[in-house]
Image (cartoon, rainbow, N blue to C red; front, side, top):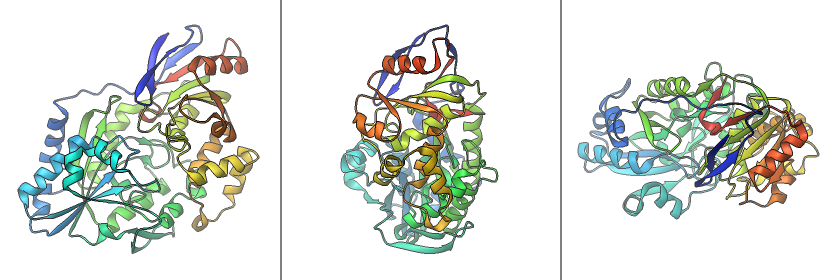
Amino acid sequence: MKTTIPYHKTRMPIEIPDKNLVGTLTAHHAEVNGTEQEIVERAMDNPIGSPSLEELVKGKRRMVIISSDHTRPVPSRVTMPILLRRIREANPDIDITILIATGFHRPTTHEELVERYGEEIVEREHIVIHRSHDDEMADLGTLPSGGKLLINKVAVDTDLLIAEGFIEAHFFAGFSGGRKAILPGIASATTVMANHCSEFIASPRARTGNLEDNPIHRDMLYAAEQAKLAFILNVVIDAKKKVIAAFAGDSQKAHIEGCQFVLNMSKVEKNPTDIVIVTNGGYPLDQNIYQAVKGMTAAEANCKDGGVIIMVSGLSDGHGGESFCRMVTEAQTPQQLLEEFSRIPRNETKPDQWEAQILCRILSKFKVIMVTDMCDPKMITGMHMDHAKTFDEALARAFELKGDDATVSLIPDGVSVIVR
């Protein structure tokens, strides 16, 4: 079989022997009705469980729009102009701040802002970038889990708080979007670490596509309520990062409808194989190893014990987290690090511990071969993975490990499927 798979900002041609290939796991096709702008406008005209945005902004002096950072492929060039136009048509004098939800990530650069919104919005609008370690935080009490709820003061010192974002399957929060704009989006590092503790990450309920009894989701919902997140615009995108559905309105009700849409589109039956080939859907989610862990969890769900995961990811931004990289690199074995994490109390969670924990969970069960020609191979091998510069090299090594008759499955976009 010859095909292409996402890699950075392009596509990588690959070949898989027919005798080995068992199947390809892809999201179901969703019927698209209208242009991207029409889909978003229709959602805004029909808010779910909420007054319209135009009604909400009337009489307000100040408002904050939470928007995703450079690691999320939110089509803000489509959504943000629509939000700004509708807000100002209803209330021309309102003071608008766009707050970039970096969560625990590095600050978004000016170039990345321009790439996200276009030059005009970046130059004209008041944009604030959240810094989880540095910014002044507002104390909103205690999370259900017991951790402190501290969020960016900009989001509290306002008359109206809304958020834009997108919904996809998430490897421990169940789904992205909605309440995640608050936690981890604009939360303090202290709050993020309490929510992402080893106990919660290890929970079998904290998995891709699951919200029910998910302890991480429960904390996030509470945070959104306490922050008074009044309205969301969340979109669903396809493999080309184009809007195929939109959900606007109440931060919980609109989000739930969007999650159900994604579940119906993304759910695939697992068919375990010896070798699983997966990507992170290309740029921006394949910028670093930190983000690539998400795609690996889809492969984890479809790989036989002791199997090989071939992760194709650009990694143009390297490891993506200094503490994440250091923890994994300094561990003698992934299993040893997992055992260390299990002994760390909830409120003593270390920065990026959660990502290291999930990566080590995968590495303790499977051999991972990372395919990239944009990253230092020593960084990859230092983190207990193999490196291959080309896909052919990785597949040949996988067959060496599992035999010429090894079964193979392909997941062209690991973050777009929910393997059940």
